[in-house]
Amino acid sequence: MRSLIVILLIVVLNVFGDIFLSHGIHQVGEIHPLHPVSTLLIGLQMFVNPWVVLAIILLMTGTLIYMSALSWLDLSYIMPMTKLQHLLTGVLAWLLLSEQISATRWMGILTITLGALLVSYSEQKNSKPGLKLSEQRPSAKE
Image 1 (cartoon, one colour):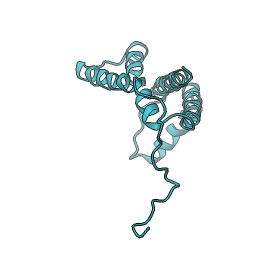
Image 2 (cartoon, one colour; image 1 turned 180 degrees about the vertical axis):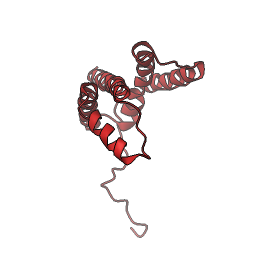
Image 3 (tube, rainbow, N blue to C red; image 1 turned 90 degrees about the horizontal axis):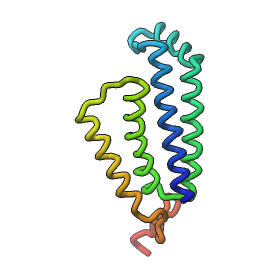
Image 4 (cartoon, one colour; image 1 turned 90 degrees about the vertical axis):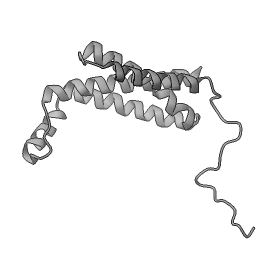
């Protein structure tokens, strides 16, 4: 249960972070990377936009919680479960940002979500963890 709550918290923080970031960036305006001076000025405007600042705080908090969860959950469990954010992001982008989402894109979002649900029925922690990166494999001579 604890793992599900933590994953849902990560998802909610990331989704609202992305929604607020999109809203804030659209308030600032289009960025044209081929015009360095205007890109710099718009870049500075982004970091004083309250929506962008709030988005960065939410996304950083979500990342810190994600890093914490990696210490006690398998990456192969966490990563697919956090893909549930695609469905929530799509719904909120449609509702709050008035984005037009095609049927093909909805099908892709639902496919990812169904895959994540399949993973959610698996065990949360392996009984036999794999070889850690810090462990060295025995040489062929041994």
